[in-house]
Amino acid sequence: MESTEIVAHIPRLRRYARALAGDSHRADDLVQDTLERALAKFYLWRRGSDLRAWLFTIMHNVFINQLKARRELALDDAVEDGLQSAPQSDPLELRDLDAALMLLPVGQREVLLLVGLEQLSYAEVSKALGIPAGTVMSRLSRGRERLRALISGTATLTSLKVVK
Amino acid sequence: MSNLTETDLHAYADGQLDDVRRVQVEAHLAHDSAATESVRVWREQNEALRALYNPVLNEPVPQRLLAARASRGRWPYYALAAGAMGLGFGLGWMSQSYRTDRFMEAAALPRRAAVAYAVYAPEVRHPVEVGADQQDHLVKWLSKRLGHELRAPLLTQQGFDLVGGRLLPGGKGPVAQFMYQDTKGQRITLYVSLRDAEPRDTAFRFSQEDKVAVFYWIDGKLGYALSGEMDRASLLAVATVVYRQLNP
Image (cartoon, rainbow over all chains, first blue to last red; front, side, top):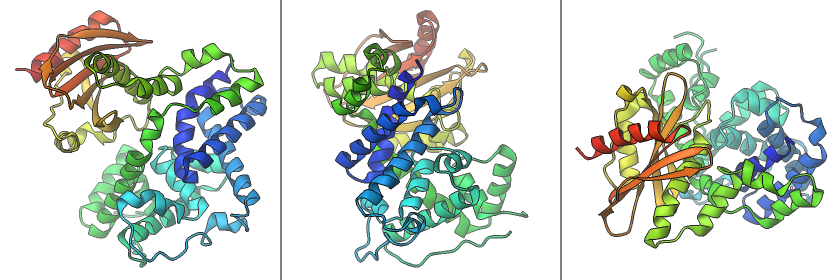
């Protein structure tokens, strides 16, 4: 039975959830809800497709719903940008990475983690989160720049010289 | 170069470019210090994320998550042991059972090495953090992080080329993993951990951890484990060469 394969993904789901949700209790709630949803919907998983990406999709949906239920995510576009990125007074250091991550908008945090921590390809991230490739790149770019600004303590964004 | 986009730079930092594009980006970076700095920062961010969160992989899986599974009655219990040797069960078992006494230390080494093998050997795109093309940097970086001089054995005569290496969380600080691959794509890993116990030496020992065969030994302050999904005799031949190279 293929659902047994899901078990093998639990440690990685927990790693991602810890980084995404920021505290271990919430992270395990997120994993638990994700596992239950995945089992209930397992018949929807297409055999041969990437199970891990499918689990990340489910976790994304569960996470957004949890945030909405806790009213931590009032508007849909808070996922995209802005609202959670409160100004930061004290510069953070790299060892405060977990705190800095929580200051990123959820959408940027998800992309940053799926790419940097989970090492998914950009195409896989696009599919897992159900967003266009261009949105993946813009969130990645802004997320990284934001993280750099938070950690180095400078608010100025250095924009790259880009030749189109 | 023409048509360099920020997307190319991100893809370069994340190791997601094909060879042709990668070489083009490298050529561009040679004279664009701002872009080079961005790539450096992004890679540092990636590395910091993995350093911070990879230890979660070593935590025992909480019972309630397994209960979520059991309550549905759809995941047979044996699947846990069978399917998750390297991932859930094995890691949990390991971290709980890790003890400082010598017997447990000796038992934990091959187990940890086999789990690290099972996690990273199947990785297609990112089996290593630093590739063999930067071997000097790789060895220096891992030596610095472990706090002990390391060496990557040369195994080309045995048919294995160095793919690269990565830093992993161990029971007592970071651990280095060197990965090698033969022309058929078969991989072996050399897992090196720094011991905080009294320096000593042991003979070769063998352990079969599920499908992964492991030869391991302790040499002074370092514990070594060579792991691969191959038969014992073939792995022993390689382990012997590794041992001789590290103890000239």
